[in-house]
Length: 222
Image 1 (cartoon, rainbow, N blue to C red):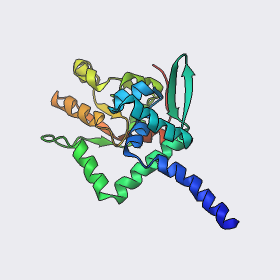
Image 2 (image 1 turned 45 degrees about the vertical axis):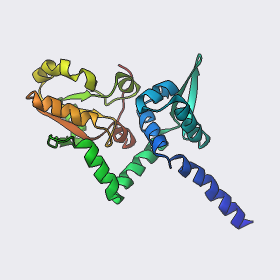
Image 3 (image 1 turned 90 degrees about the vertical axis):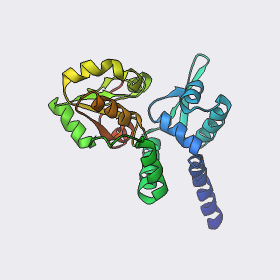
């Protein structure tokens, strides 16, 4: 009987592990770590079909990793809790530290050919810069992600609109950009654009996911 109960325990734990065992589901978790989304919005952001996204979400929901709320006829999905975001963060950290293939793939993704590495700041550096008012902090994610939760004091300057904000940013002084997390290229690209315009710019070493999961304050709304 004890062996059966033990096996049952690990069977149930395996359901949670299986939910994370799909690259496409991990992409959806990565997006939901930034804020809730509808199926249609997830499909557009991930470049997947709506039917495919719905199927993956059902697996995540059966494992109690996502929850939903209904607004009229629209269903919004979100991570079930900060512990799910922390689990995803831990998976990425272990992947980077233990798998050379993950680290090589990440380096290839972030290091666009023909460009140099950009300057980095740690989360503690960012927190200090905010306290001192010594840098202009910009969030280059889409606006809906900024509204769902951002670094207090940061301004929303989506990457797609960055070129029109260059003159304003030049007048403000040093710029620190951040985006979704360590696997996000948007802040990397933003710093390169700003540096090419002669602006002193660096990026956060990771992003909003790690900022949240490491206990830093988060501001919601405009």
